[in-house]
Amino acid sequence: MKELICFLCPNGCTLTITRDQPEFTVTGQKCKRGREFAINEATNPTRTLCTTVKTNFTEMPVLPVRSARAIPKNHIFDVMAAINQVVVTEVLCCGAPVITNVLDLGIDIIATASMEATR
Amino acid sequence: MKQTDVIVIGGGPAGLSAALAAHRAGAQTLLIEREPRLGGILKQCIHDGFGLVRFSEALTGPEYADRDINAFKQTGIEALTTTFVSRIKKTANGFTLTAVNETGVITIAARSLVLATGCRERTARQVFIHGTRPAGIFTAGTAQHYINLLGQMPTKKCVILGSGDIGLIMARRLTLEGATVLGVYEAKPTPSGLTRNIYQCLHDFDIPLHLSKTVTRVYGEERLTAVEVCAVDENMQPISGTREKIACDSLILSVGLIPENELAESLGVALDPRTKGPICNAALMTSVDGVFSCGNALHVNDLVDFVSESGDLAGTFAANYRPKPRSEITLKTDANFAYLVPQRLDLNDDLKTIVYFRSQQILKNCVVIVKVDEQEVFRKNYSHLRPPEMERLEVDFSRLNLTSNTILSFEMEVS
Image (cartoon, rainbow over all chains, first blue to last red; front, side):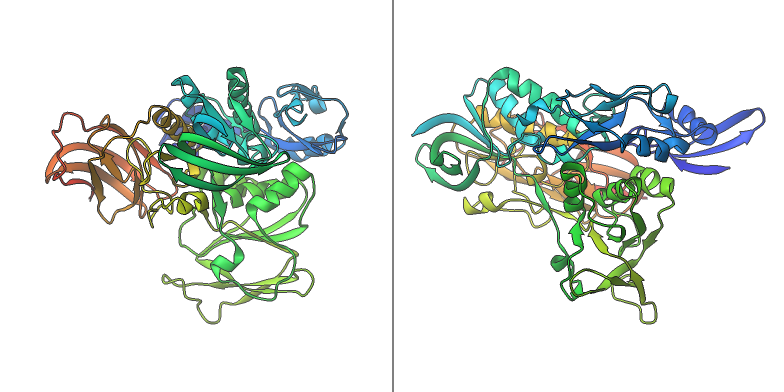
């Protein structure tokens, strides 16, 4: 049995998950998303990665970015390294891809702010 | 002199919502922001989790701000950016505001004001850390500004004091960017930040959280070289024999936020010692007629969604404001409440009220009861209340025949 905190919403339910072969038993969730969260945490935990990428614009030296979807937790530092290789040279809008299909994970890294706002 | 109906001071989420609401209510509105870009502190809060209540999705801070900024720009509301308000004077018909920007000194008259000035971080001097004054002691928000807006790393190896949400978020952010976070120290026996942030910012990265321990001294001449940590008892007094010296180049502080109310105080607005923000009625009007408060200037929120909500309320009421007599009663609370906003209710206003509160301690299975002259009129059960998690209630007082002699009290029944 393992105890964990669901962070899908501000409720922050305290969940317990037990592996009862072949199924999982999850308790403590206030909504149905809690069960899915606990099973994902036990089998393939994923996280949305939020960071910044360098630009060559002095008025906005870094641009905030995130993974368009959650990436496997064990790839977080590899993806960070890939993002840190990139320098943005064009003006991008919020939502524009900065890296497509990062490390062949099938997930894009997208801008989360508009650079036009700085002009 | 330039003339307008409503002036909103502050272009963060509260100010943007207030300006949008005032405009929607038909008022000629002007927003003043001291930074070059709108969005306030959200610009540097690049992590996700914003907007879960308002938009039902987990946005990053800049994405959340982007939605309000786009809506704002579509309305054509005038915004003065890189403009600093230096003085406000009350006049017979409203207010005269003096501000400074690249064009020089400007004065503007308005009928009502919305103060959406946000909050500030407590600093090292406010938590009584002694020793030398080396470089390398930052608030978490300053470290966040360096990394997320300037792209500069302020530390390679650090200790974080305080388990507030920004400190937890920065523990993760610094680790992602290659710094070593040796530990988060919290003087209180329970964390100050949201549980989900403890989980995804500390547990995910094996960053230790030391409860009932604090930083007692800093070392270093030019740059910080070490900090001394020490266990504390329940009265926050150091326990002898527990001192430990930890080598690090930075100390990052996440020891609380205080509403920013310098302008409010200059107008004579009365502040609540519990929230450190203005005492307001349900229209979010302060003790000074025509001055409204919202967002983190009113009280420190944990979710931006409620910051926006209070901005929306304050903006609407500021737009509809006309001088009228007040008949206010106080919302009394028992000792289980850390605070409750609004603190007052104007019986001449609409009495459908949104109430925000925090509990003083962690409570399980309790009931919040509203009483009118000792008679229960409302109750709500809570499986748990935690001080870091603000609660929101909607209470309709309009059918209760309240008078200026009514005693209106909020109580908690703890089983």
